Structure formats: C-alpha cells, structure tokens
Length: 312
Image 1: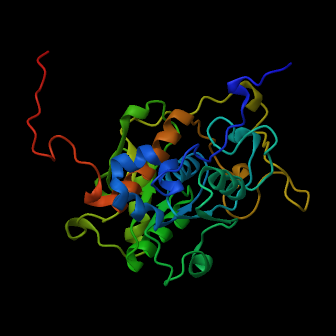
Image 2: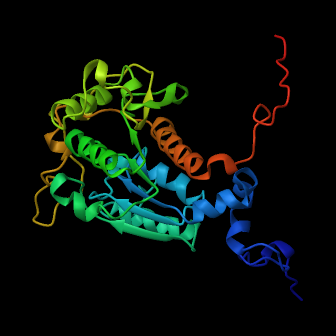
C-alpha cells in the first residue's frame, strides 16, 4: 500500500486553520510588522504608476508588488529582446518578443491577486501625456524609469505641475558597484551625465528656474557616485553593431519605432543586474516609505533609546 508522504501534499495559499486577519495581510505578514496594519492599509489603497519597466523599472515594480501596493499601472512600449536577459526580470526563455508591461503585469497578479494591475503598451511623450497621465488621475506616486531625455524631462515637469510625487532614475548603465547608489534631490545629484542633461532640459526647454533662484527641484532622484565606465566593444561588433531585437510587424529589423531604437544609438552601454535592480528597489523603498509615513515601526533612535556605539 502506498502512503502519502507529508511533503507530497499540495501546497495552497489557504491557511490550515482560521486566522483573525484578512488573507492579504497574512500574505504580506512580514511587511505588516514593519509598516503597521494602518501603514499597510495605506499601501493597499495606493495607486502607483511606473513609466518604463526595463532593467530599473521592472525591479521597482517587483518591489512595489511585493509591498502590497493596491493598484499598479505599468507603462512601456517595448517588447523583450534577447539582450535584456542579463538585467530585466521579464526576460526569460520563451518571452522574447512579448510586451514587457504585459509580462510584468501577469507576474504582479501572481504575487498579489488582490491588486489591480494595468499594463499599457505605450511610449510616454508630450502628445500622449494627457492620455497616459491625465490631470485628474492623481496617483499617489509616479516612478520614472524612462531612458529618453526629452520624454523623461516632460514627465518630471508634468508631475511637478500636477502636484504628483515622483521619483526618477538617473543613469544605471556603465556601473558595477551597487554600494554607490544614492538618493537625493534631482538638483543635488552629481557626477551623473543623465542628471545633468535632464536639469539642462528642464531649465532651457521647460523654463525651470536656473542659477541661485533654482533651489531644490522637489523631485527625488536615484543616482550613483560611481564614475561611468565606457563599454568595451565585444569581438562580434568588429563588423559593426548587430541588433538582435525582435523584428517589427512590417518586417524591418529592430525596434525602429521613432522612439529609442538601439540601431540609432551611437553607443551601446554595458549594464549589470546587481546595479539596475538596486536602482529599482531604492525607488520602491522611497515610494513605500512615503506612503506609510510615520505609521512605520520606529528605529531605536526614533524611540528615544540610547544607541551604543561599539568600539573598534
């Protein structure tokens, strides 16, 4: 006679005995112990929009989904390419050519079935701004992980004018050391060429204050203190860059779609998942901490406890 081994029993999400909490609270039990139930309720009630769900944005979404955010809107025009595998959470065997936003939305629904997750396959640009971020949308937070300067600056400007909190990611490419990632006001970042270009665009094109009158931007930015590493061209680029991106419906090769085609870039940057993911998780952390606020568990210093500094 064959006996069922206890480890062969099917594992389900259902608890084996009645519990006093809501099921979703227990799904995120370990987070609730940090945020408090009231703080977690705020996360469940929150709506966060993420623009760009590639190497940085994809991990930001992962962090937000695993933090119980109640509504996520994921905006990205792109599809998975084989070269995304080294750093993008949706890039797996069998997903090449599929929508990054749709793949990530499906993943989020498995993490938190009670969440509302909306995937929008679109590229943020001024003419579509009202459709993608309506004036009356009022999300609790926007995460900007776009890598197109004009689109990025316009999104930052729109959020600022609409009073929507936004956190923006600066350059995560060309870096190898995640311990140098920092969070600061956009106008207080340094050593980052993308941040410098965004500041210039905001001041020159979108009429943000310049010079001594500028003050802080009021926009959180993630950046790295690490000096940018220029790429070392691999041997297969000896005859010129060869694009591996899925072909477009009309049969042309690559993502030649008037937005940010890799075939149009003068330089293909190197990137590492242990840096891009940290950028994304820092974004998720900043959003969660802002939503939870002072309802979170207190540190020893915040509790007024004496903190002993161990001697070397």
